Image 1 (tube, rainbow, N blue to C red):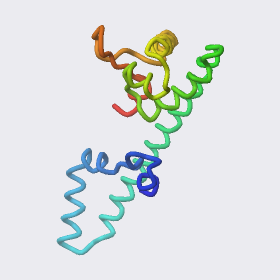
Image 2 (cartoon, rainbow, N blue to C red):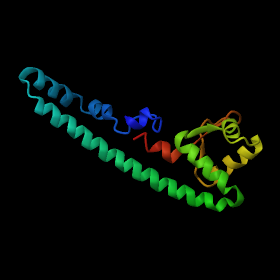
Image 3 (cartoon, rainbow, N blue to C red):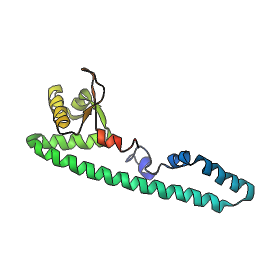
Image 4 (cartoon, rainbow, N blue to C red):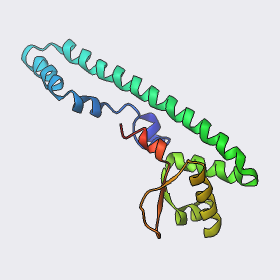
Length: 151
């Protein structure tokens, strides 16, 4: 929560609501036990189980992100003189994983054609995928990264 408040993260990494949603019956049972018998221990155990499960899942996701970033950085090193811009672009994609060419051009103060070439190179390297299917106003996605959060 401190990282969210400081603006480092947009959302908390321990998202307990998902655990509660998946375990709705046990959640309500634990609340009922507390209400009926003042047995807070049952609720604390349930809550801590959620924290543990969520933390393990978060750690696994974080490790996958680190591995993915390393793999992408190796591919970007092959870009020659555009590698520096590629690294900056990659860092941006990890906080904004879906972008248009116009957004890229504006973000990096580069020409539209330069942004297009950068995106094309990222597509060829398997880093980005076109998301819309359109020929104009296309969006590109850091697809493997986004997929880590869709599970």
